[in-house]
Length: 116
Length: 113
Picture 1: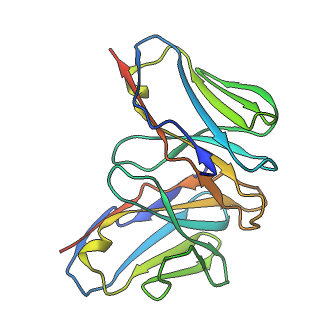
Picture 2: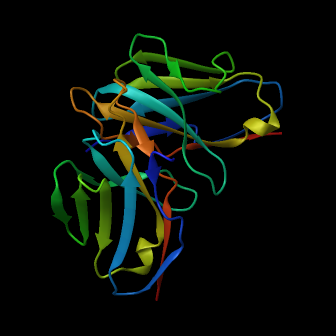
């Protein structure tokens, strides 16, 4: 298989606080992990690409100081939304590609963030 | 011009019919093509990958690739109401070494009982 987990599945936080989302590949080593955001009835939007042990590459328009990504190992990446605001409320989804394989991305179940 | 284009739909088919979903892409050197299914409120799930011209079958699903026409399609035979979802076409980004995929905006499929 190629199972990716995310935690938490849902989180509600107050405006101004930070939230950390974990993404783990459970049964494979992930060369690269990706973080997406999806607003209701809209397309997936790639936020950043991360490789183990190196800095994430952010897509144009994504604030790297607001969305902190750490890829500590071949099975774990974290996204921290700092100083969250209501407009950050969205569905955050990670995906991973298998070590030494190419482009197939396996998605985690997503984290629904609500900022009040 | 969008890099990966899909008709947003909805595509409505009766139960038992063949659903045909289409996708065009702009980068001629793309080599890897994927179809993902996304149910409402859930994350995408990989259902098919195709790398060579022609057809690739997996159960009720058939992916078709025509690199000359820059066209990839997904056929779903014997469509079931449970197939109702948004289908995302994804293509590799050859100019990017990060294994990034370019996603279309998706086609919503509705299978009527």
